[in-house]
Length: 79
Image 1 (tube, one colour):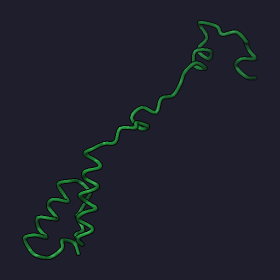
Image 2: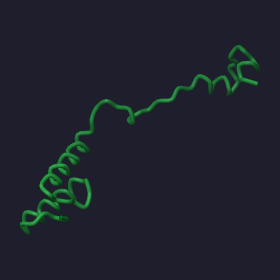
Image 3: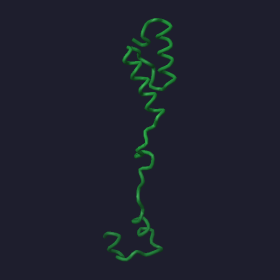
Image 4: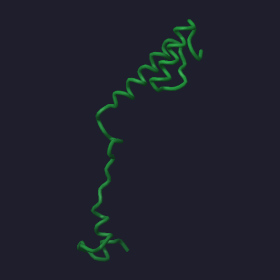
């Protein structure tokens, strides 16, 4: 039996009636504003990979470390 068949009109004290009015919200998962820090880190990672460098991760710290070591040694880090 469906809830609305039990009582077709909403009842104020009925939890089922209240639950039927709930709406889900995607929150930040569906935002249109890009995350600038995240995009900057990924771009730095892509740039390093284009130079033959293989950073230990995609964080800006890991990418910068790999680039620094590559520049100091004259050899692509992680290659």
